Length: 232
Image 1: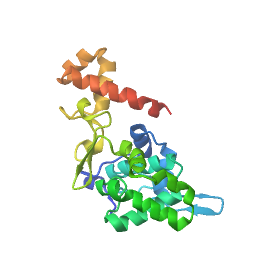
Image 2: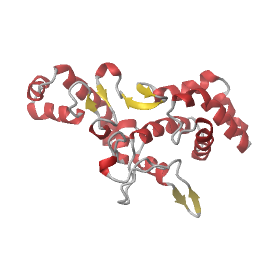
Image 3: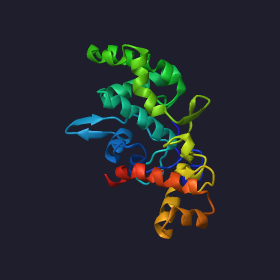
Image 4: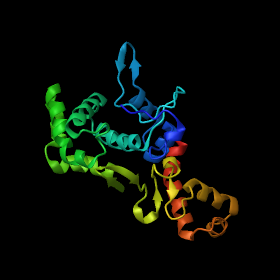
């Protein structure tokens, strides 16, 4: 299990707090923390779904880019009624099958994931959930939205376009520690959005930052989409 232990080694990994991750992907920060740290209810202890890529040894929870992508897929299955326990067991089975520490967001999982979950469900003896995966189409209907707008390299996520490639806002762990940026200029989306508020118009912000007006518009659209998550 490989942990990133200092900020100097975060290039290509990405760095997000649970709150930042929640804004980007719409899964609550407390839920993300429980999944990555584990938790207890009464005398019952629940192990983490997986261990984060990032450990800064300061007692706080962080995510890397791959963690961000895994959370999106795990949440899709849990939203369909699968327990966190079954998702955890599916990750364990998939690790062996796919040979990836974080298998849910791989292209290989798109193909083999249905078999993984059916094996887990069979182990538990609870057949009622098999209906969720009775056909390959049903399985893909669950997983595909979580893997949309991702660029894959060697079968694993390399970058994510949260509002679509045509809008040029990218989350790339190789750039700005994975913070959302305007792909054309490299300026963080939040900076461009804040420039509109400071300058009073999209056109003025574009002039100050010497970027196309379209870059400012895309940053504004991105921020408006994630703002409800931020407020929550």
